[in-house]
Length: 362
Image (cartoon, rainbow, N blue to C red; front, side, top):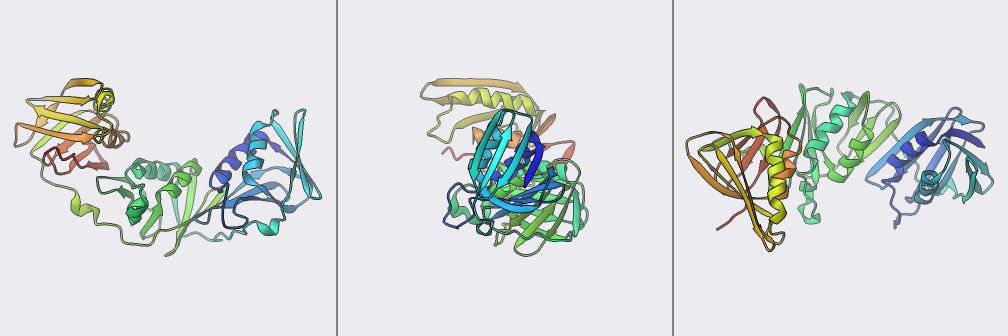
């Protein structure tokens, strides 16, 4: 079997699949890359048992068949190839890979040892791919990372009749983002946050088709198919914890606050929750931080409103800057109290909301 294709196309497709394949696994075969050769394409597939990915590349294929190789070794070979084109020649138990003046032989593995993946033939819904990726990425930062936090380690996706919403929270911060498009599906799914990372990287141009059941979300683009195992459990009632009364609210440029917090937090004590202090009074926001190496501060002029004339509170600087990353232009920062959640958003765009719980300073 002889296959000729562009190195960039192979490397790009391989990057999506190889990244999810474990380098070591107690499950036999999950470290393998399955390569199916059809009349005019090469199909790469792999799994980590939580996420299955299959991607297809147009290619000049002289004979059809299926082979399997150690995924990470093959990926290293492809990334190191010197030429723009790649020729792969299957010879009994070896795969010869040639590019430019370089050639190498890689030992093949019995393809029966590689997982055989099954993807749906029909899909019930459709969304714009890049918009869905952006929506998921805007909230993913707020998902928990600790194993014991269980369902908080997922991103909830609400598939509604008139919109699609992604939500993530770790109990100390929360974010939701709306996509002003309906998928055609209704219901909620909870996707593991690390699976969200991979889905977002795959979704680029065009549309993505979706279908879901109680255990799995499946997606299909023009080149790639994905099965994502869903999390089992009840996501918290996030709407209940979002405050609706704010004695102090300020408005300013999102990038001004983001840059100021980044500068000031250099001096923050990393052993004390990376603390930065904010003090609002008479249209001025004062940001300060202090640690073992010194103290820093910066003042910003803001538009201030509310029933109280001042407020003082402190945040984990990373939590605050993470929430600001998805905001451009104007920012409205609303304080419900010195120790109760603060809400961030664009006053002219309700599609994104972030909530951060201040540090307790007493």
